[in-house]
Length: 300
Image (cartoon, rainbow, N blue to C red):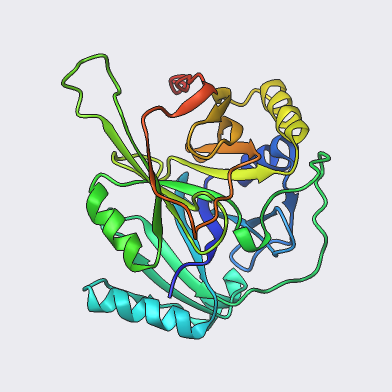
């Protein structure tokens, strides 16, 4: 029993038009048919959607959809969580149909991050075609990418996801100030049952938007460069300049989404051999680049 991949994410917004412009015009995602809940559905591959943006009363990250291989593995995961005292609610048939999956369960991790656990890969066989010429994304059986979630109760969250079958890939403890007594910010990078370096990372701090960032991996470095140019020209806030991470070798930049969290647009992430991989402890976060810039203050 283990999570196979990050199947999708769900976001709530007060401004669908802003998300549509950001996702299609700047990032180059493909818009799919509107969901039964009125959601904007965004594609990166052959799945009906990987990002669902639902109209609502706030701008926030709602949940990650974690995929299991089949009903047996999903049932094992649900039983494991219930045995540990986690409140798990079965999704209705309408909820499963809305997510375009066969079966769905809801729960939350110890930090309050919402999860949707599902099985059932559904395809409509519409080829991915970017409106901005993105050559494609590394997705498919590797999932849509990765998500980094706030986890103030860091070790409890790590133990929770280990129960679901996630395994450690890397950890970092980063000093956020020059003070030698800085307690350091902890991050745990965890992989699912696919070759992606990490499908999940946990950061030991609260985040108002509900998510630190999500990552999409393009098929070429040019895709990244063109997207960076579009984001700058379109007036989006570039949270981090182009850089290369130390632990997964991803070359990427970060841009703020209309939801207040970041999207990492990357290329050429490491795909370890889990039969020989030894979990690492990275002492630095980047090999080069990734100069961070805080977002501008909100307009009064």
